[in-house]
Length: 513
Ligand SMILES: *[C@@H]1O[C@H](CO)[C@@H](O)[C@H](O)[C@H]1NC(C)=O
Ligand SMILES: *[C@@H]1O[C@H](CO)[C@@H](O)[C@H](O)[C@H]1NC(C)=O
Ligand SMILES: *[C@@H]1O[C@H](CO)[C@@H](O)[C@H](O)[C@H]1NC(C)=O
Ligand SMILES: *[C@@H]1O[C@H](CO)[C@@H](O)[C@H](O)[C@H]1NC(C)=O
Image 1 (cartoon, rainbow, N blue to C red):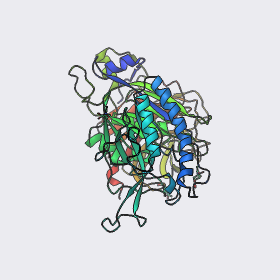
Image 2 (cartoon, rainbow, N blue to C red):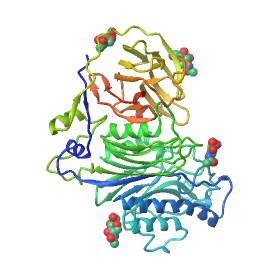
Image 3 (cartoon, rainbow, N blue to C red):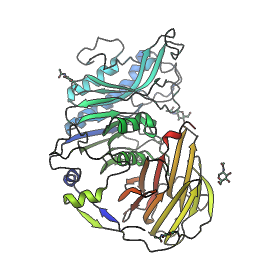
Image 4 (cartoon, rainbow, N blue to C red):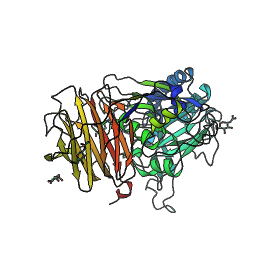
């Protein structure tokens, strides 16, 4: 039933480009900065414009240092996190001093650094624009934007006569504003309005072609994230976020890794660092490789810089390789390597034949959803768990710690806590405490080495495979894809203990019941 597993070890970036389709493939240098935000300690109180500016300048001072440092390492684009200039927890009224109006770059061509007095109250845009121009790189930042509206002609216009948006702004390497994106999927942000329609925003760079933009929680939804990738064919994304880690399924780097792999895109993800809020986890992810940062101990910022291949088909160059097929989910990497002479090694091997023994299942809550679970018994096995029409199958072989319980977990249905979205999930999780009550809880280390094949009978095409190692180290499957009615993935030979292996299916079309 299971084919021998081939583990492809891509050890050098040069091999990566060969694998990605053509010796002439182009590359560029990207940077993301995980920022420890200087916060306003009393976000509920309204500040004057000058006090709000004094506060924001403290964060912009750090941005300026990091832009300079990134440019010294050759970066052509840098991404800063969501909320990283102003902070969190404002009300609609208390954020007022922080607002500025970002003109629509499709209507107005403007470099704030070159022409600072063209629009009033745009000191923050001015400073970011000058950073981009002075260091000659693209800068992506997030800030609060105010857009006036007329309650007479626009029935959605709030009574105070303005929209307030959580906004990403992109500056070109000469300081010109080239993109503005208003966050669509807000996450309990009392200060902000969602735009009437989701905005599909892209911008063009001379070094890598087209990039798309979205923010934080957007990554879980069809619009704009999936629409950019599937309808617009965007293959490179900038992603400011302020993401609270939630194990076992949604740590920041865990889902960033899965999204990039499953959708076949490069994701430049910049998160906030805050111990109090459980925020860390940034990275530069290509479908094949990742440079990431997840640090729950330090309270400092972190600059990541990496050379990555150009994935935009119109800009990738090369000798007639043409655009790569758009994956959902994951590239068939071993085949690429075999053909292109990359380094592949055998790993794993077939699992011993064993009929699935009817396991006793139990219900357990994991991340506010009612999963059906079964414990893994013995050092190898064959387990099946179903929830409704979704059946999850697991073959496993483990070694290492005998005292770490694991469960196979299945859930299909509507997730309704902290956001509403339809899921189909098969997950192999390390239980956080004694089973069964400890299964589904948060734990960030494991010693058990696990080879596995995990599959499910998904009804959605949109399955995000993820493998997470001890210490919240994102890994990825050796292979994944459809086998008849099943979507499956396999992984063998990990060096770290397994925290979570998950097939995170998003049934986008069922989000609204
Ligand atoms: C924001 O509010 C949440 C919940 O009300 C609280 O836990 C958190 O500490 C607050 N954060 C800041 C930065 O004020
Ligand atoms: C500034 O950058 C924009 C966007 O890349 C470009 O269209 C424009 O030509 C540049 N302007 C100058 C003066 O170089
Ligand atoms: C796992 O169990 C199922 C059901 O008994 C069986 O069809 C399948 O062949 C088994 N797989 C292996 C590798 O033993
Ligand atoms: C969770 O699922 C179990 C088994 O399907 C069921 O008995 C239980 O009532 C459910 N609990 C909740 C809170 O939905």
